[in-house]
Length: 405
Image 1 (cartoon, rainbow, N blue to C red):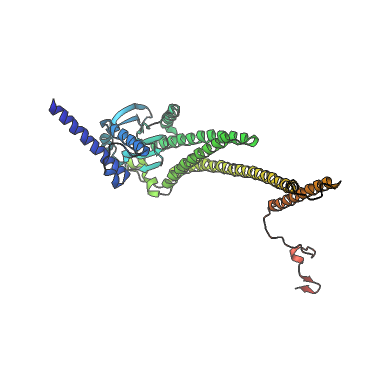
Image 2 (cartoon, helix red, strand yellow):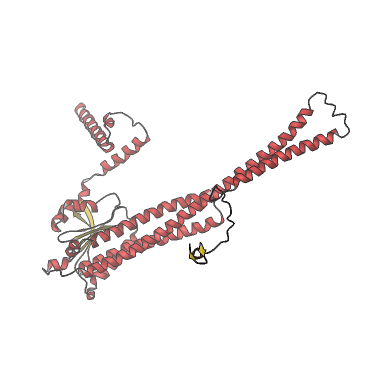
């Protein structure tokens, strides 16, 4: 009994040490090697929870991949089948690092098109596929919840692979379906964001409040993220277009039949077509982003103008209070218990009242005039003296009767 408890305690201590050493390597900070019972702050707690979850998630099942396989006729041979990474690497002559990107548990942010000896690896947005001369292997994307999009893509892929009358090689028909699905996903998200931003900008024309301004900021971030993804897709396609060797190597059917590749015009036209369409989406996203930025600047100008109006109102009230205070100063002088002999004058009250009102009006008028001068804003602070010369067009200036000066 004691021996079992001792073994259990040793295993717990070992697991704790391994966990903290791994945490120290992640932080890249030597101070984290100091073992403490409780993390210092909330950031350490969150980091520890994430790392603990990642370590617990490392199970032997990660050596397996879920794939959907389509044969040379375009028929679905296997749906969500379990395959070993090692078997896939050996069968398709791939390196282990090629499948590491496919099996990433973090959603991929950088689209890639990798050309290998007998296959083309495509990793763009929601699609992770291995295209060969006679088969297509679709890898299940981690975290993908849009089953309708995947179903539409699979249906179009089957239909396109079975259409042999087009004259295009098997791999080009598969690549066309993949790029078309990616383009459809980008267009759908572009339409959704356009409607969101357009509706919000229309609402802000009538009223600007905190909630709408906060939503505008949220949509702006979402639009920037979408534009970055679309730009990366465009760069991935352009990168393949810029490599003649890669485009030659993507003729998998010709390589399999030992036929030389004379030119890659067909593939270049296919990739350029999708590249131009993605570029249009990127340009539209940039235009919407520019409209959002212009709206934000206009909103900031309106808020600054309202703030300046409130400050001007406060200054006007202060100036009016100053004028009234100056008039009350005279009344204060005569309110003291001192004899001035003016109180015996029959018109003394009216004279002093008029004097106090005149002083208050003079002080307030002077303050308002100074405020009006300060509020005048121009593009130039210097006032140029108006020219007394008659204006003439540039070709007729400095002309004399005998010629040009």
